[in-house]
Image (tube, rainbow, N blue to C red; front, side):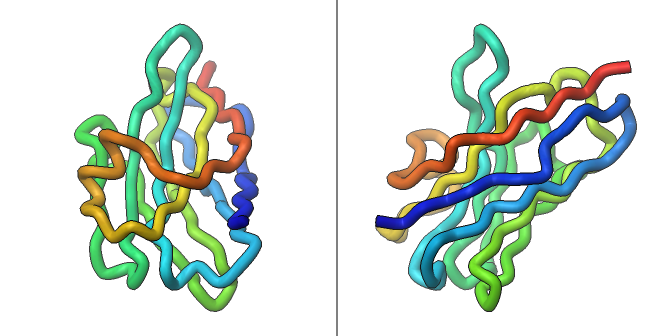
Length: 125
């Protein structure tokens, strides 16, 4: 079974940047990969998704222009570059994967099949 491990979370000040990484346990070319987040007391939110080839990406409106998703299939790793972070970005960020070939917008709304355990991002002054 595919395993996903997130890293790169931490405490930063507003306006700063972080890069999250999602390492997969096996060859990821068949999987779309997504990033989701959940803040305390709030529902899970789809943040960004990248297709298996990397040719298609989707973003939540709340992060467009600030976050960039990318993937390195040779390293079985997906990245989420987060710039100009805001306090409202504070959440546990989860990496997820799915091989059913649905659209990115579908995954961001309904979720994906395989999940990591998450990494905490805190944006505070």
